[in-house]
Length: 175
Image (cartoon, rainbow, N blue to C red):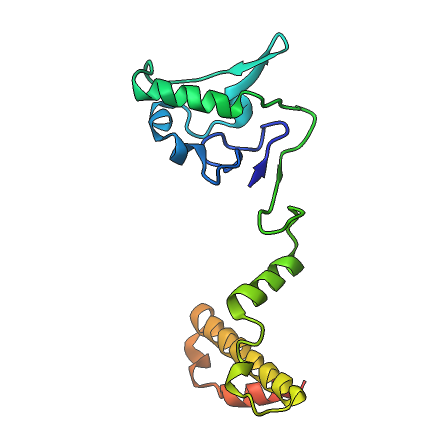
């Protein structure tokens, strides 16, 4: 989710920045259809005039009917927003309580939610803990070796098609 400070880097309609979990074009599709500049930034639509924050809409035509209700709802959502031109817009990662994204946190999240605690080791319950770790390492090496081989076949030449991947897995597993 985007954190709005200056509004310079956050797209008004396309970025998720208001906390509803949706971008404004999906939340207010009638207003988005009326918008002249669909790639406008937050600071294009929310400006300070003589110290008072107000809207700076750019519609193709006058809004009426349900679009007026949408304008009122949108106005209530952003009515208390204050922009700080000297600050930079940022990001907040909703999957971490602190809101900070790191590769380590993302990796742990993937391991725990998608792969599970011991995805591969459930199939070999009779092995000792050390043997399970060795088996897991060999499987990971095999996956990487196949992925590497696939990329070389697709992106270089087809001369890799007849490579012995088993020998490569054996060699790399010993490392």
